[in-house]
Image (cartoon, rainbow, N blue to C red):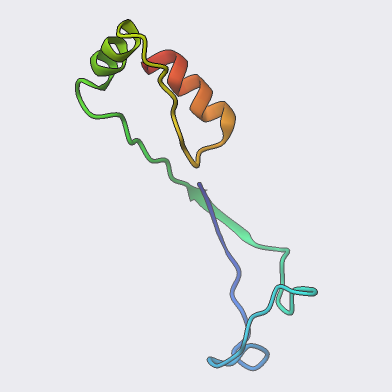
Length: 81
């Protein structure tokens, strides 16, 4: 996840300013200063790989449902499960 900032003028954007994206943003969308990256690590609980293997041996088709990008989910599924 990347983070950036842009200091806004209090005169142009007072505390009660209503930011709107549609039909077109009414706020700056360029000239941000990059602050850094942050990563998250959320491994499966201990024993999940064994449980999935046991299900497969029993003839059960295992599927993973995720909100991750398809490539992230696919790589994780291949490497971990």
